[in-house]
Length: 458
Image (cartoon, rainbow, N blue to C red):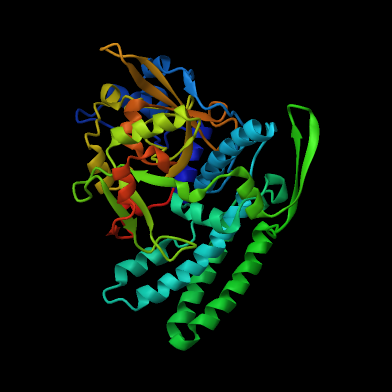
């Protein structure tokens, strides 16, 4: 989904984009319709924008997490899921260190390149093993097409981020800053993917007894390539920072990545992925896994499927507990690029040109019309008094990873209606789940094919 993400990011940042049509479309009567005359030289976003929706949704929220840290920027890469993961961890670490150690690090940021390095490394190794397994399966053509199509994209899933962090820990941003290829991943991905496919063919021709040694040698070469592209991951480092409480520079010496993770007290296994999949063939209150999708573990990416109102309730309870909510959504759907506001039909095509998309969420998912293609974190919500004098959530505050200028100081806004339609996944602390929901994680999962819409990577 990396290219789709870059397309959406371009839409947000290039607000002067215009239609590529050179002349108006001619109507049935031989003359141009009113909307055609204006559309030919203007974008839909500028012509059909519903400003009433924008006016009703200011960037004001009466419930927000306490920690407010600088916006991060993934540049021309599809690392959103890793940025969202580390934005979650740093927010919790900031609060923990402030309350327990009386230390305040206002510019706290962990290295996304560090965990990106090991995701590439582990995913390459996992794909070699997937290839061997799939190659031995009967009727495997669709599996091979899926594997060949995009085996080393930047995108990923929560379970994949979780396993990388558990195995390799985390480091400060300064200990492994972004290289050129971390910020612009296209060239690196192309070479690594070509190399992977050559390795697939070598394995396909080799005797099974030699696979283990071949893979070992292949991974040595891959590590050398990754060090060239991204740099050598640190194994020990000093963490230097300025404590805002005292204005003094403090050094935590001789840390390892796993020791720093331990210092944050973030336990990855305590966080669980919840999906909203309304397709009838995937009933709610069941545990699912996507086959042949992973990195560290020889285990599929998985989640519990719950109704959308339960996802919103869990998100609200998390914010109330000062816990950001990692979530996956279709970021390019129904948004205004200038304000970052997401709301169904904010670009009012029905009024402007009598066009309407009547697909429901289930149909959008089945037809790949809407997919979870970007991960961010929810950091707040706003309530207003409802008809029955009860508080109702009307909008949610989103911390993105596209830098401060994209588009509103680095934040986006989604209305509650947009949450219903275009949010597919959240990650919350396991303690928020009921006992019945927790028990689902221990059941035998239903296996989903890797080409399923929810097998896409944020």
